Image (cartoon, rainbow, N blue to C red):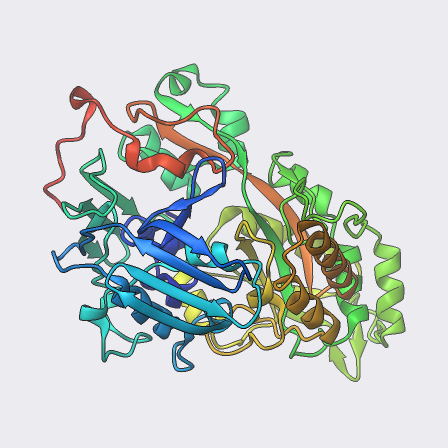
Length: 502
């Protein structure tokens, strides 16, 4: 992994590094199968009432936590109360606050009622990982030591966590899903992709996400690598963007935001950084899906248009040094990103293009946990270069609605547009897929015009996995190659024997 999780309670951490590890420790009521259809995880069945307002989940019998205690509907209710508590600093509360009543008729039944039908309801219950009431009751979920010492119910349990080095998981004998086929799962924190690659070549790690140079140039030139390492390519449900702090000047001016959008050559980034292994993006949805508005096109590269917009906004090169000034202040800011070579390289190309139109952009690269804690959660930044990993449901209320700007919430850029708020509210209450699609197409259109972020690209995921790991679906199904990682196995002669260091 490039970054170390800030903690292992996903509803608090809100980051992909935490989800990647915690997904092996905790369960949700539902999950998506390989074809992206919902199926039960902790729930054995569920029933939706005729008026679409009530869902009744029946849990599987004899569920246990890793410590042997019974997992019941009381734990589900407890988790719902946690995520909807106003004192819980979480970006995910909005989905669950729409529940007007949650109840547990018995230890195996959990029932929720909504004031009106809620389109993303089922998806939301696939996204909430259930936490143990007997270990967390009475604690502050924001600061609890449980984030470093979690006890879950899934295939693995925590064995050790070495700061800055690794998290080691071991098979959970009480797994609610049955035993995983691999005994140990070790996630090492190696921020640099080149260092990761050397470890892969030395057989010190079995899996990593390749960068485009490694995938497109190094592997084809070395046939011996192809013999021992399996390569995969999949367009994930994520995109990379440049985001403005809309509470800081001059980013409150739409002309400045649009100018920066015109000044950046996105195809240059896709070709130069990704070696073409990416797709242009013009809405916050995966290209090619029904939610992605086919009528939208990315802002074209047009530096003359960018300069005209900045001039209209009152910026001029008064000192004749190439840097634009307004009200005595130069048009200068810092682009903040985490230790991720693709993002760093993208920032360098962006910096160069912005300089050409009179903007002085500096680049600052930070380790992930510090980046989130010091800057994202405090809102202390000008511009960030980040990515969004998205749910399969198109609802993006938690990212774009003006109410989602509190500490730890996802609208950290401070976006506030009443028209977008209204569309997001309509979209999550519309059950007709075609009507819902039109709402989100309009939402994406307004968002693109407003330019609170610059869409850079949707890159292909390029996982490389050692061929001693068997049981991987290839070609990958819609859910991606990792959908059945608990079924992966390593034949005995090929197993690592040196796990004692953990």
